[in-house]
Image 1 (cartoon, rainbow, N blue to C red):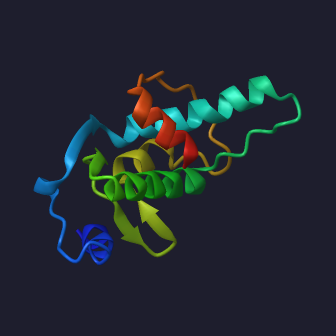
Image 2: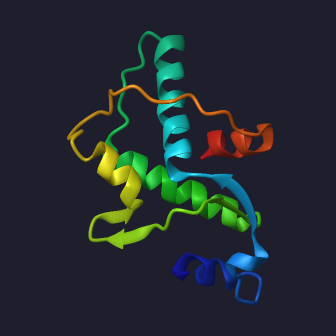
Image 3: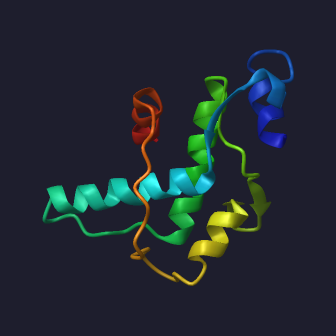
Length: 123
């Protein structure tokens, strides 16, 4: 709710969850896409080294949700918690917390709507 209130200052009224369109994805769906993007980049460019850490993934989820809220869409319903070192989606944190460095475990390929995919890639 903090992020919704912060984004509302630009439009001079409080945005509530009822005002936003629900895209219907989970945070894990979006995390899988971010991991997939990096793997695609590694295959396409032999000089690109994997670098997506658990911390970077959490920040990408936060920035993605923020960009979609600006457009009137809730990308995923999982709450983002504000921890000492940054934003955290607990379900994604619990899945990758054993990855102290670069995430290498396999992910499920999720399919996103083209408009969502375009915005997500820009994040």
